[in-house]
Amino acid sequence: MKLTSLVVAPYAFAAFAGLWATNAAADNLLVNGDFESPLDWTSGVSYNAGYSAFVGSQIPGWTIESGHAVTIHNTNAYPYIAGAFSVNMDGEGYNGHNANLYQDFASTSGYQYQLSFDWQGWFNDSNPQLDVSIVDLSDDSVLYHGNFGYSSNLMQESASFHGTGNMLRLRVMESPESGYNDNAFIVDNFAVSVVAVPEPETYALFIAGLGLLGVVSRRQSRAVV
Image (cartoon, rainbow, N blue to C red; front, side, top):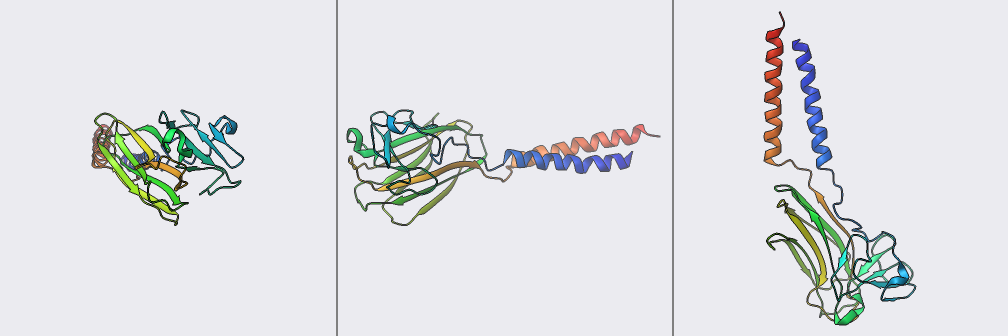
């Protein structure tokens, strides 16, 4: 019976390791963070063969702030970063505003997350800035904020933050705005994922599980003559 206990322990450890690997898998918590979901191209408030400007909830997974539009480039004529579609943050200067879009996602308290995204300048306009933030919707606390000026290089941003247990909001906008068709920033590939590092409470749970396994093993040993 001692042999049985020794065999069970590795399986218990393997099960825990598998559970952690599943929970910490680097799945993107955002919907359509790469803007590749199908679009009704001709439903935009302004469009041609190379771009379309969308409003409201016309971009799957995202909400566009009222009074703003978000320009999507395809690969036909205008700059893009990856895949078939990328966002031009000027929003065509719709209603005197530039692009302002957001997406909400759930977080777990104590978990560490990673935000990543790509951006690149197109026209060198000193007026607008690309602004990306993550805010806790329960108390408006800022978990991440990045504000970027023009660069012709492809920039790949990455930052970590901790979950609060509340709903969080990723917002992408120009701030300050230019208010016109500035063609200043192209963005793409937004992702939020859990960082694969166990938190202290996870270790505590594992240790408690091993302790319980030890108690069961001792009881089995005493029960066998």
